[in-house]
Image (tube, rainbow, N blue to C red; front, side, top):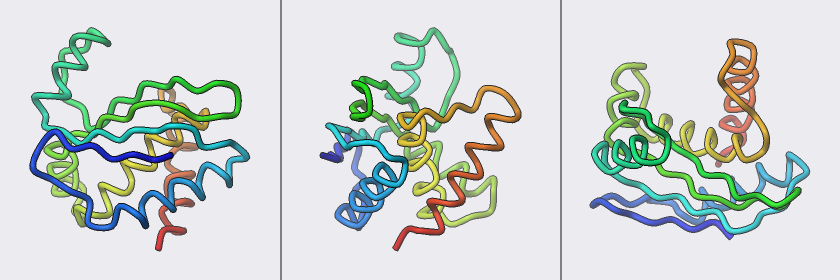
Amino acid sequence: MINFHYEIPFNLDNEKQVSDWISETILSENLKEGEINYIFCSDDYLHKINVEFLNHDTLTDIISFDYSAGKELHGDIYVSVDRVKENAETFATEFTNEMARVIIHGILHFCGYKDKSEDEEKAMRSKEDFYLAKRS
């Protein structure tokens, strides 16, 4: 089950479509959908999590906590709406497109994709692009 939670005044306009898209992505990766929570928050909110749990004193657009069990995906994905807005401006893309990229990026981490090395990052971007092209 995909759940959306909001810690700030923000709402996805199309929760059902986004949820279906995430579910289809999980199935395409030959995995099972468990309980996945997306928490949309501010820079300050996510920064506190980054410092407290990861010892990173930086701003970020997404932090994922993976509680998956075998092939069944479970976890919490925190998304800074502030960062996504700024990234959309920086990369000259629509906010909704950047939000979709961040949303699918989080689930791809649960699917086993990493982005620490240059090669991993290229593979992650390729998968993001693949699934972004599939969203309705």
